[in-house]
Length: 255
Image (tube, rainbow, N blue to C red; front, side, top):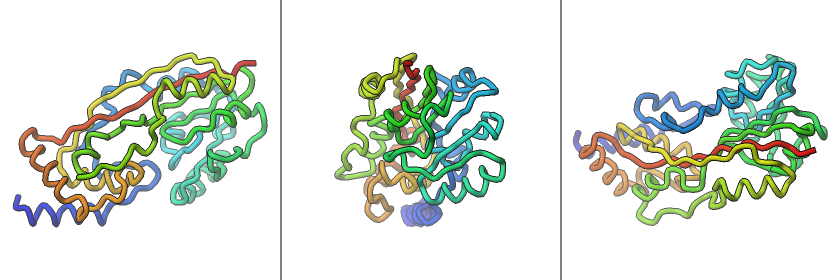
């Protein structure tokens, strides 16, 4: 494909870049990630939940993962802070009877002390002291988090002067110490680096635009040289490759 046609395609992806909840279906089959993590977060969460447990999903996105657990709605709560996702949760979760509250996890959570048996959080903010407060004694917190070096190779590919790591403390060793200091015992801690593949550069453009905390001030215009480099890699290898960074932490509130 000629350069001018490629660039037109990339601009089109840039204009279409929008996300509802945590829905990446726009680039489904055009990229791959999290295919070979050494854990299955959903199965781990389900293995801890009993049908009578009060559970809370912090930073639920649009509630996609939470709904996949099929836990009784009357015993299910969720929070979200990002305004478009808040609107989505009010539309989808509240009518089901799920207890949804808009909440910024950097502040005090709008729940009582010792309220929940299980608190989960996938790729969201963490306030370990507030999580400790709202969990019942012996309650469990389960999280899968995006690590500090996530997509870093992709960032370095498409920027001439790459931005700094947005969350430089997101490593499992640091997370463990924070939770121990807050009064938790660590039941499991694991970290993984795995490949992410893009099969067309337009998918990479869309991806970068919906993750502004990783791809700061990204645009086709600003990053055109880097996108040409990505296109050359694609033509040489059949894909553009980088690494994702994830960690899993399971912690128990000590009495």
